[in-house]
Image (cartoon, rainbow, N blue to C red; front, side, top):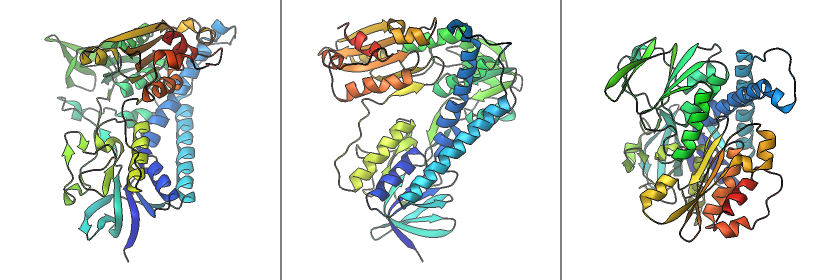
Length: 452
């Protein structure tokens, strides 16, 4: 017997499981297909595992520097990598169990297995999973993304790591060459550097962290250069061996010796093997095309998260899933990308939202840059002995806040403040009138706005 649903969701990552819970709560009979573990890459192989490891590394650094705060420790602080990995796995298990319980509490049917679209009949979309047929009135694609492996000579013959293997290893390489200086690459560089691994970061672009503000990115690079990471910018990897990565820069080749290679050049949408051709969905180079309601070219098929190939961030995916469910319920919610925060969980943290200075220059319209060092905040100085950092805010010719970029802890927690200002069209003057608690690091945003 074929069971019919109001909404079928393929993919149980952040977009999928949040959308499933919301849809079921609103009364839709909902089924969620997931071939691996609920939580997707983010919870099982990405966001949460990396942050768990990074917190262990941050704790180690804090203990090593405890004397700056008048705390004396005996001997040389060290670590147990196996216990760090065990703790990471425990955190992941706890959270995946919580998601499963949350879905069950809302009445979502979770079907384990790889689902594929087999076509349409009347007003139904046909889906197969584990050789069982299902039908649904609406479909939400949340199939995520996969790691891109570049066609580098010799790489396929090397026992290289992707983020998945880097998260699981219970032994440390003496040296690590990271191909790609984006967010994922820098977070792993931070972790392994803290544990004493000699780290090399190789990036094709002139600066690390891709589309993030270049001044802020350069500050982070300078900080990690002091910590011993070697950066190779404007460098193309032309060959890989088990002992080294061969790079080319300005026509000159150089060998970067490393015991292990980590490939981290980006991700691409999962759009193959799903049966999308049966629906004739419009796609672009990076993923499935959607409108502001996350609706595809098929009126009853939606897509959210990495599969759209636009903003490959878990928090973006969650919001996109919310918009999709609201629209199929008859709401008027629409997706906006004007204030999507981006965070790098290094030590110190980096975060940005809205326009970068480079974006503002490219737009060719008048703007101003307001900047203050993070040590202008008393709380920052109290908690980050000798720490450096910067708060940088972009305003347009009407003094509306269009961008904010931070380096320094806890940038990841502060960036939402600026994001709200951008989303609400606040001016520097109006947003500075809010009362910020004292002493907090967040006061740096108010103080920077007062430079107007």
